[in-house]
Length: 94
Image 1: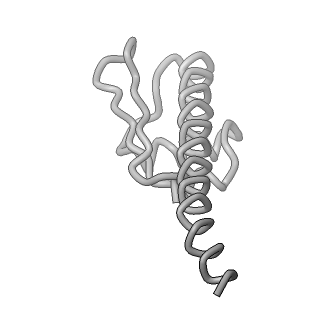
Image 2: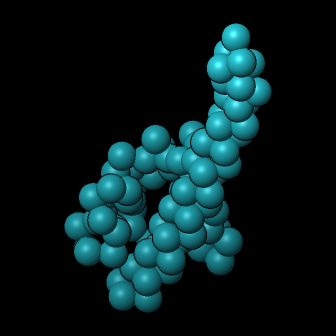
């Protein structure tokens, strides 16, 4: 009985902690992708072409990102080269 009560009390806290960890990982990945895009632009004089997946693949091919970035779900909005936005579509990029 006591164990059941403890489980009911602890479970919501564990779920919140997991969500916060996923959001933190997502924010870190967004910063990493943004930095890789800036470096790519410095090296090549332009941003990688294509959709977001193709752009991330170009960053990986150039060695600016690890293959782990390919498993995330990110959108790169680069219609204005001076204001590039990277968005994580799912917490943790999974």
